[in-house]
View 1 (cartoon, rainbow, N blue to C red):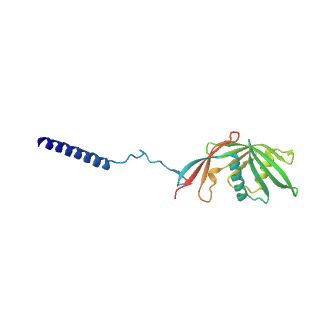
View 2 (cartoon, rainbow, N blue to C red):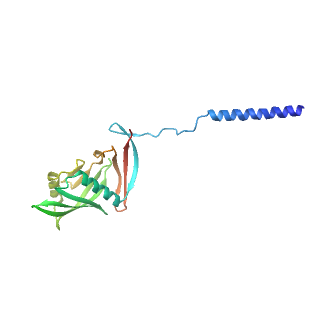
View 3 (cartoon, one colour):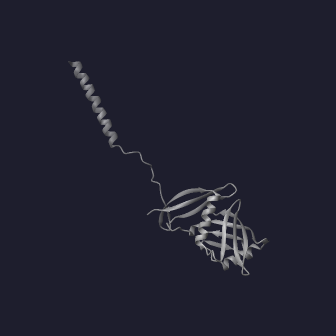
Length: 193
């Protein structure tokens, strides 16, 4: 009988140890990240950033959609085509006639996430014009969106993405804009409710 008592006590001890281990595991906290991922703040609004990549074709469609929605297309009709450079084609009113125009631009991403366009060429019809003169004329005579600023003396057009907020509160920041490699990325800022 002593043998059975000893085996019973060993079995009871194993069961007790098993119950203690299971109970201890139940009460131990779950492994959690050491630090909660932080959101960012823009103008006091809590936002979550998303990195988004696109290609020239898709961005061309998006840009043209917003140009159509945001600009006075009666006085200045134009559209954008992204190739190895940014090409802007349009029609302007001059001498009571519609005249074709073309701008060839080189995009540069600035440190603040805005985009700067260096004007390489500007032509009306087949005539190449002095860039600074025509940019000054465009700046003074056409209703451009507020986030588009023309610096005619430097031959630059600044696109202030930080001033462009969409209806749903989304905003964007440019990260890369390499048209030759078709490498275009933006950080999209999504506001939290």
